[in-house]
Image 1 (spheres, one colour):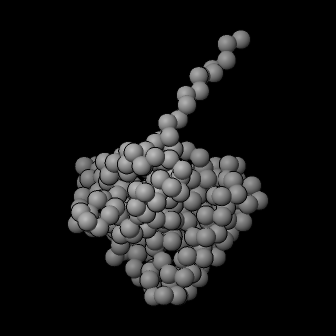
Image 2: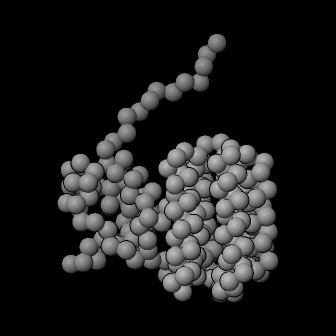
Length: 232
């Protein structure tokens, strides 16, 4: 019987550096507008050459995840609400509505959560717990808490261990929290709403920790249904 086995290709060091920095950005560890470590410091921390770091950063620049500022350094790119984001363009072309967007989000989130219950490792769980702490801190400081909320859902996307899911979810949230921000402000401004969201997040994390796919699917759907009523 012929088995579908493929040769294992060694990953370049620059690819590993790129993946690690991109993950820090996607997970929200490196936040929009934050200055990155200098090439020399990154090279020392990762124990690789500066040329390796330079190659990795150039790829991040090409992807639009970071920007160089002459004489200042490299910064995580801040999404400009005035700029056209890919999802926004696609919605216009397809004549899609916010309801369509939320329906897609429901499917993405529930499936990601179910797979996360199967595949999440200790680092993924730690990232989710950290996002919860950050969301509480952001809200206590007077911020909306949407940055930490994004980190929470991106942590679930990473836990699903699907690179395409991660890419789609990141683009989705760039639009979701910037393109329809005004639709969400009254949700995050309400103390009771935020407390409800935190409880829902905790239920999702607990279901993932319990490896209960059905339970986490229901918990995520309940969370999405709650958000939907404030997003129209």
